[in-house]
Image (cartoon, rainbow, N blue to C red; front, side):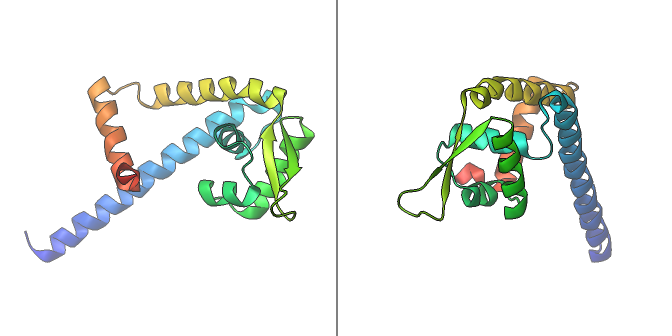
Length: 150
């Protein structure tokens, strides 16, 4: 194979990989927005809720960093979640400029609903795959993110 063909194959692979990942991201975003509209959730609110559930006392900065979200987006979404009665803040005694975020009882009750919708989306997008293909897909995606080394 000549180097030019190799380069074209690489460009094609990169483009198709990007398209597939973008499609999956947008598909999940659309599905979750539609599924959670009755709860007045928009955007990354469900991701923030899941993060706070796993990391009680997380700061907005840590959420932004972990979820690769803009700090302003996290600030707006956490404020809205607080208005909806899903989150509350406590001032960090070690650093009074920071707030620790926690789920309310209402927020905690929504976590299984959010996880169920995510599970439904996952089942929908992998419906044509065998159990082995799903396991391989997850293994390869995890390897790509570097999380297999954690």
